Length: 437
Image (tube, rainbow, N blue to C red; front, side, top):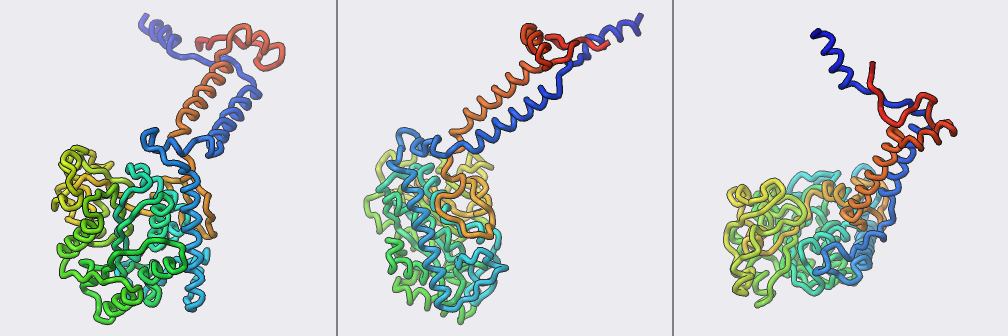
């Protein structure tokens, strides 16, 4: 009796599908592939970029601005490449296979730290200017706003991308840069970032320059580097015609930078702070970057006294910051471990930070190639497509495929009869799955 009950229960559990022809299965496979390809290759202009920041933050002509920023970055790359050719700089295929001229030597007297070649090659993409603009808009920045920028010589291509994005958005940046660079950056002793910035400004490619330039490196003053190296760094700053920021320590470097940012705007407020690279004073070096991560980092609360009382958002900055990140949404761990730095001060004052680091990760996130061996042109890449706009289409595509599958696997009786006549189903096909016996 027990064995009979087991067999009866097993019959209720196991089913076999109706007999489906190979042609029907092939039809489902082709249909599924076609839907996926159609959604992935849908023209980007169908997804309006003007909806990126919502109706309240709509940016006029945002698509044109993004493309214009990328074209400006490409012009800057070309200018620096030409300058390297004139100066006789070697551009080795092993380091710069696309011959962009934006990748420095593996080692020089002014190299501060080891560099990641894949990240440097990935950053040499003019469409990172569009990425920078996407991040600015995401942070709530609008045309005409005042922003602060802190950059090093480690990623000259990303520096150019940020400058280009800021100018295409008609922003008013206050910039503080540093001269030292990690490997494969602006680390040629006769063509460092201060030299590049001056070159691009004099050729009319960029319209803004740094307020001051520090030596960079450890403690933002090239601590631990040789006297010869410090002289080369200072010579580059002198050639640029910009004042040297000479600090005594990390704390002094942070205070000096905050003072410059504060004095430059008087009673105005900053809409965002953008960091490029891993400057000690700007983000607390590698440790600070690990805490902050890449992209947009927002303050913990929008109810900061600055917003309620209208105080200067830099002068009111405190010495610690609670940072909300993907890994720590509350910001509690970040507040406990973050090193004091300019980015932390801005966050503490209620100003969002945009951290242009982890070029490879940003490239993958925004549909740009990683370490391309070919020249990349403006307007190329997924950065010009809003992925969120495709989600409803993807859901609709999935529903469509499921319905088509259901019609083939469990078709209505009338469809089965019609299908038999046309050979879609076998003669033993039925409209419902059958119990296994």
